[in-house]
Length: 517
Image 1 (spheres, rainbow, N blue to C red):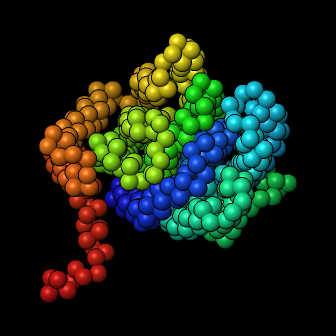
Image 2 (image 1 turned 90 degrees about the vertical axis):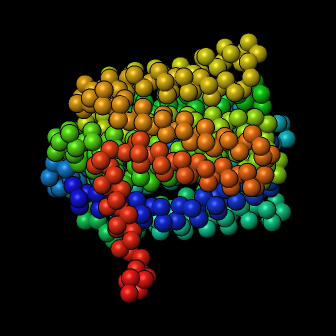
């Protein structure tokens, strides 16, 4: 177990190596782009680009299937199958790309003939953005098998290096948008597509030079049985991801029809904020998920559940550390970050972060269920709950309710109601002890969150919005976080892992020996 902990820790360090810098640059880029485009054009990009992102979510079902099969083969000792899995995945994704292109071009006529609410003078630019987004999606789909290989090999140093490179590319794009005098919305679409093209070139080159199984020769290695098994598994993953994506993007369309593109701009800001905060827990999950998959391949359910619960707890706490001070100081942070804050952006950001926090409590169990492979019944129930917010919000908006109810319905259906299905399926197929889940995970996470929120709220009673109050809130929440997590949340084993991680960090400090002497 020690070697696995070391590997998880090292992979996490690689991923966090450039996270703070990437966050700063990404937020700066968003500020520049929003100011350059204006809230209406930014909202157009979010709603039109979101139509394409829908296919990205759907493709995620196949991405999960690819990584699951590679991890499973590695854990079961079937290394010779990995090259067949890779070839099957490449072939399937070529088919997905073709189907996606046809579907998106058909959808093009539907979106721009009554579905999307876009100002007439920006229809031309919106159509160009749509076509560039289609091309970006096709390119992104083709990177999926290669990313699955990198994750399965736990070679996450790659993501740290490439992430650093693309952080600069995002900043360059933002600067070009500000200073080049042309239709900035169309220019943004062109530059984003070029970025996707660079990404696929880099990831393919890296994999071909580093992994023996990265050989695409379907005549020699294509296995119909493996492809059929992957498609069977992915079909249920597709069901979950397509309904999840439809819930999010469908909600955006409903909001667009009732309230216009300015509210979509607020949603875009909320998405940017939550996306940057989610970098922290996602980095940890990328380091742990391959271990969960390999434990499933070994039929080691005790280890699988142990890593699943630990990943949920740690990802929740990592996000919580940043989420509580952000939620408490959203008004001041947004006023510093953006010159013109879109209406509803502040409450959207707060609710989206809360939704993401609740999601972390179950993320490990969902990964365990997917790794185990018994997802048929689970996917059907999840899909129904994912799609439920659409009719609910349509009815509410028709009755005059405010746009904030979209996020409330998401929290109720996607987080609270769906949690029962996840827990039941994890208990049935992954040997989850439900009492342990609530006592060692949920209750401890809630206690820490309440303590942080209570302590962090104290300065609000005697200090107005300012830099000093935000610093004080950050200090108080950090101190209360460390104390409450150590004494109230972590188990003895988790404390040992934390101490071991600290010792690894100290061993890397170059001035350690000199200070001792």
